[in-house]
Every structure is written in C-alpha cells, then in structure tokens.
Length: 322
Image (cartoon, rainbow, N blue to C red; front, top):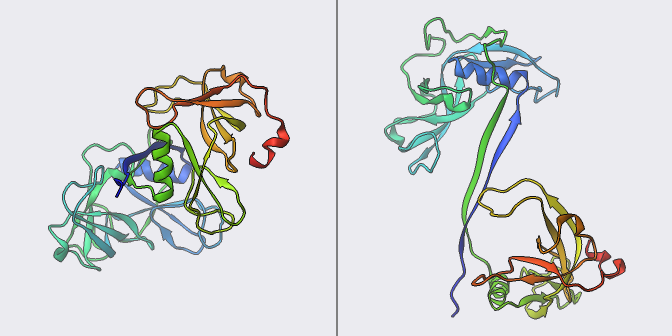
C-alpha cells in the first residue's frame, strides 16, 4: 500500500481596514477604558456597535456609554487554548450582555474550570495593562459579585448615558492578522497526480461520460458528477489562456516583483491549471504564449513555466479554457 501523502499548510495574511466614526469611537473608547454602544431608531443599544440598523438598514450613530459589568447569556468551555488566543490557560468563550446593552459581546472569561461558569452569572471587564485601541484592550472578563444595575466602576450604572464619541488621537484603522494552520491530505486522484509530478510527468483523469481530461484531477468530473479513474498523461507543454501581473511581494516567497501568474492549458487537458511564468519579461507574457515546465533540482513539482519558442497558439484553440 503506498504511503499516504500529507503536508502542513498555512494560509496567512494581514487584514487591513479603515474605520468609520462609530467603529473608531468604539475602539478608541476601549483604549480609554470606556465601552460604547450605539442606539437604534427603535431604542435598542447594540454592543459592539454597528453602523447600520440590522432591522431597518438605516445609518445609526447615536453613541452611548454602557457599564463594564454584565451578564453571561451563553458560554462554551475551551480546555486547550490555541496560539494567539486571549488567554494561555483554559477559559470560557462567553456572550456577555453588558448592563445597559441589548446585545451580547463575544469575549473570553477567566475562570478556574467549567464548573465555575454558568448562564446568568455576573461578570466584569478586566482591562489590559497596555491598550492600543483594539478588542484585546479588554483582556478578558472575570466573575463579579455585583448585581444588574449596580456600579461596575466608579460613576457607572446599568443605564446607558449619551457619549459624543470624541477622544484625543482617535483610532482610524486596524490591522487584524488572519491565519489558518491545517494538514492537507490528498485523495487517490490527487496523490497520483503529485506522484507523477515527482517523476516530471503530468497526469490527469478522463471523465467516462463527457470524455474531458481534468488536470489536476479531483476524482470526479465537475461537469457530469461521475467518478473518474482513467489516467491520461498530458503536456508537459501548454498554452497561456489568461494571466495577471503580481506587484505585491508575498511573505516568505523569494520571487522579485513584478512577476506573472497564469492559467495554462496543457496539451491534451480540458482544464487550465495555474503557475508562474518565468524566463521572459513580465510585460511580454500574452494570451496564446506556448510554455513548458521548468523543474529545479530535487523539486517534486515545476518551479515555473517558460516560453517554448513555438508560435503563439490560435485563440480558437484555447478559447473554451479562458
């Protein structure tokens, strides 16, 4: 029985966004140990605040300050915290309805164990020591003995009070890192495809119904929905059907920008795969360009594709694959 292929993969990127007046006031308020919500036309106070009424879709901007104490409305215990989660010890994910708010705020509760957490328990904000204008300025929630409407901090009650949202040096944008770590295990069809690439061959599978050859194969025809198992060697040469010029350098990728990423219809295939084009200035890449794969020493897959020197393919030969 052949070895089962698997590989650890990471998808990671920084998500950058600018903030409107409502979100700016909310995050700046957290930096200043103040929790703001927004009042809808119907009188509901939403925390965290949004810029449009979820019922009427009308723009809303009436800011109010709510208490830093609240009530747990639902929870789930996390026994094994992951990297970059708010706490490095077991904790509870909680929805907290802060006093004066009508909606729940998702955050974490620092508790000794699941037996110490219950729906309806009273909690309060524990502020982070260093605050920058982010949701993590609330380090977590912690159990509180105060009852509804009782002060959470000096001068705070359960009733929301108007707030102008004005702060010194407001936060106007945020960068939120997004990351997904997972282990990928290909199935039968893709394992055969990857093993063939290691031998510098390209193998697809033919649909028994429509007779199209798919590369990379998925084990089933995406058009007919039937299983595929007839293997067909294609290429290795192909035709650029469409492409884009990349001008942003990717992290941990040692390729100088600009470069070209293209869809390539390999000879004998009915589905274009994507790969980088090299060996030619980026501004000379074009639709119809004939290319071939280039392997580097010890690589299990082509590093890039380069021009073959053949005349460009006629558009009618690849128009169905654009």
